[in-house]
Length: 146
Ligand code: DAT
Ligand code: MG
Image (cartoon, rainbow, N blue to C red; front, side, top):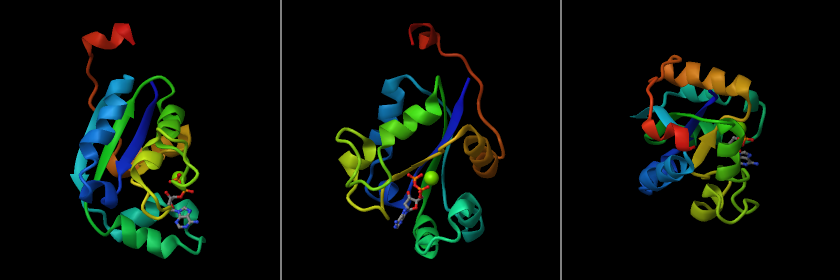
């Protein structure tokens, strides 16, 4: 079963959006297999966003991600990587389709509330980086209805 790494960024935590965002993924039928509220070191933020280190906004991005606690999660389900990205909406909330998380909860590209892995390779890399690869395996009786 596919797994992805999702993270509610410091703006989402400060604005009290953790519950509403998690509810969307629960209602969709995805399974939560790990989660934690945590502060982020610069080292972790820089490793996480390593692909963007040459971008002009990299310093601001690391400042932002380390500015307050984030809520890190691993979710499991069919095609969860691409479906979670679709539920999040485009990177810039101004371009995100109505009904997506970024469209409904955010207005600026810098503070766009949520991160989600963009490929199977990055999902595995990010699950290893943030959770040391650890997730909870368990059955839900509802699974046969999904
Ligand atoms: P995504 O988060 O949709 O995967 P990304 O990986 O390209 O987008 O960029 C990571 C984060 O960096 C993004 O969520 C917000 C920030 N960012 C991206 N492009 C930006 C820009 N042009 N100006 C400021 N911040 C930007
Ligand atoms: Mg990305």
